[in-house]
Length: 84
View 1 (cartoon, rainbow, N blue to C red):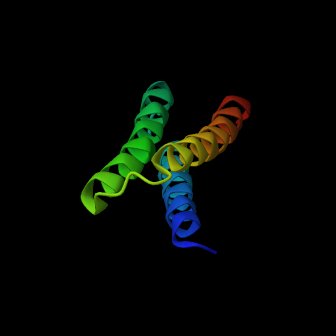
View 2 (cartoon, rainbow, N blue to C red):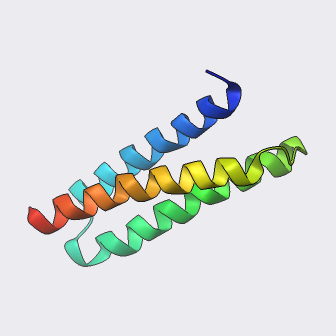
């Protein structure tokens, strides 16, 4: 696994943990706002990492992978929230 994928998977794990914590602890009315904040933070982390490393290589690709994974994770948690 390359360094790029390690960072992507680490962010996905952070999204999953944050999403589960939100699902368990946040009131129902605030969950979706917090889910959108988690998704925005995940994309911002990729941008900040590339800004700090001064590397523009594969920035957009990582942002697409992170946002797609975060969307899938949070969509699943949203379905769980709606069905639960």
